[in-house]
Image 1 (cartoon, rainbow, N blue to C red):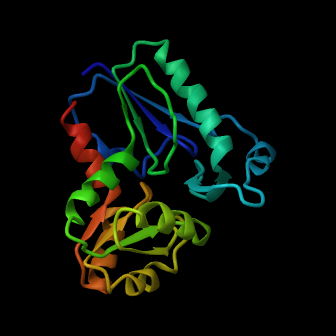
Image 2 (cartoon, rainbow, N blue to C red):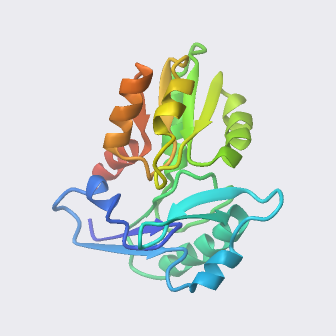
Length: 217
């Protein structure tokens, strides 16, 4: 493979994700781009959701969590994809499991949300109850409404960037038959903690994405 572009909705570099996503060799060039790259603190604060705005959780370069409005994020994300479409990029990978309806790309684009949701569609066949872990309490109704149309779901929340609630969320989802950690920020150590606390099999979004990317590199 030639050049690969990785887009985070936060700031680059995403050294917490990229080493788990790419093999040590096989990609001649990797470019990381962030929706929040180059923005001052005030500009990031202005991107915060208001009222009923959809919410997305991500990480700044210094490790801090930030919550940004979904529509604002999609507009900036589309601008980045449009710019990459005019360059010699072989593959674009989005480092976010958020749902971006209508995101357009002429370059081959991998959206983790589609990979995660379709994988669980297959595993939930027959009415198995699925537990879904998302970063923010405000995201719970959206995910319950969207995913509940396809599976019997239970949704809980725990931020991957602010410790303290992961064990509680795992206990809340212990009645499910399997649990999906529906954010790229969750890592393998977090997956093991949720599996241990809940006693259930746990799917990690970044591992599902990595398995897909590996077929291209």
